[in-house]
Length: 76
Image (cartoon, rainbow, N blue to C red; front, side, top):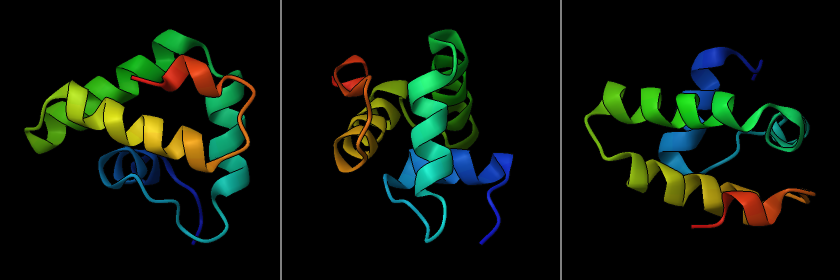
């Protein structure tokens, strides 16, 4: 699967990492500006009609499953 912007939304909503996307997601969550990731969480939540808190929980799940340097930043 090729990693595209919609994939980030899907990963944030599902809390899962598609095959071949772990390195991309790791780099994004470790290096992207925090406001950019927060905006992605808010957009994914609005798109699906769920709370940003629910999406943030999935982000924390993703952070735990990846070897992130900023893992603690994404914990709820």
